[in-house]
Length: 303
Ligand SMILES: C[S@@+](CC[C@H](N)C(=O)[O-])C[C@H]1O[C@@H](n2cnc3c(N)ncnc32)[C@H](O)[C@@H]1O
Image (cartoon, rainbow, N blue to C red; front, top):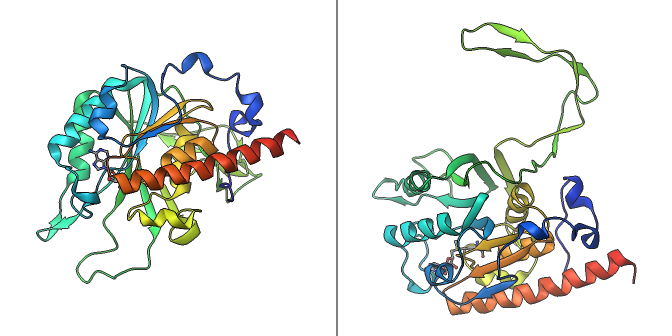
């Protein structure tokens, strides 16, 4: 199985895996690593100690668009899960919450916004809002522009402990010396000294992905799950807001996209998935990912 291409990134992430081991071991208090358990997210979360998770990357059911085996998912379940996320997230830890509204009764449900405000009410900072634009081929809507926006809300518990912005936006003026101007509250403009423009800058808050087939998941059988997060999206969130050897949690793990991306980015993973067929799928996918990861380590060590 091919591993995901990794974008130009931080020095820590470019080091070979065995040299990364010195990073962060002392910062990684989670007792549970590299496990995906078939259980309800709330029951699973309650087995975890407080403040042990540096990063969560997860995608809840989007309203009632899919039934996922009929397991309960409603506002009460969401609020209980959000409270557990606050409890287990370590200071400076991050929760990436991928959400999209359903269209029901003629309008957007507003669920994603309500969820974001609920997280903020618990004490999380809304550190970043990312708009996820997928190249979609299906249905043109006769009464709305485009598709319902899909977000990743990036919440932090206090000041984020790890920020590695992905710098893959080519700069139009690369190599040129340019002045930048800013306007203060009174409207007065001041200019900076000339600054050399680098070849690449941090990407904007709209993240674009091609989806479908291998662009979404490199294992074909993963599509037995009806709502996969693109592997590249999970990877980019993990690289942006964690260090190598951190634990990445996905309490609504589905087919284990987050867990797989965490492993391939030299992080540990922990996942819960309540629906047995999806859990079996997740285990198969992770077993293949471990094989690929082992092969990569062997290649890197030249044996
Ligand atoms: C949007 S999907 C996540 C897909 C995942 N990001 C992936 O790429 O495979 C949401 C998942 O949450 C699971 N789920 C729903 N309620 C749950 C609960 N209470 N506990 C654990 N998992 C739950 C569903 O079965 C479904 O697989």
